Length: 204
Length: 92
Image (spheres, each protein chain N blue to C red):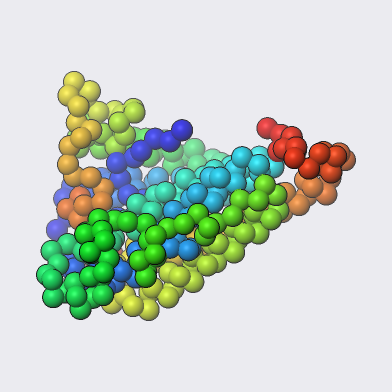
């Protein structure tokens, strides 16, 4: 289960409205390399992961991604306060506004809704961890592309924090992969070969 | 402008973030005694700060808190995503 903490992982205080920037940053909410995709990916993969280290890593990073989702939501919310129709039209957020008003909706920067097709959960521990290392890198580069459009230090500060977390998570997934590879190399019994549908090799 | 509440919250954020990051590190380095001692020390400090904050400014968690529970303060504004409840760590 989960317990909610009434605080952000990193503070977000944005004084200047900027709908054009909100439109770009929204992709980290519900885009292909966004935080909801990251969280769902890791929390779904947990169930078939092997080794205590890798299970804990998926569980805890999947949880931290939910805190990042909240930070992105807060940034987009604060960037879209008190907009005038003229501002909206000029920013390119007008099409989004017609569909969602000032609501926070999981979509990418072009407005396409979030889809689970952005992520994979294969049931193979090694394959999933390789996917996750790639996912963290993709999220990092997306933050770097976004940073090219930020001229407000209030926005840059939390975005910089989130980018750094991608690097730490990449590192932890790499270490988890080493535990998994070692475990598979030492395995004497291969239940998966006798019964491809078995999941008893993800023993508790 | 920053209020006392903000400084108290900043302390909790700093300590809790250290715990999140150390926790991830310990998941893949469970035998690192130095990191484990550090984790335990920070956890103790974070808990003290949390107790102090919740007694003065309301619960951070509806499930369990150090707050006075004679009234249901959980629903009180502000919520974490509002600009008003936040502060700048690195003011420009």
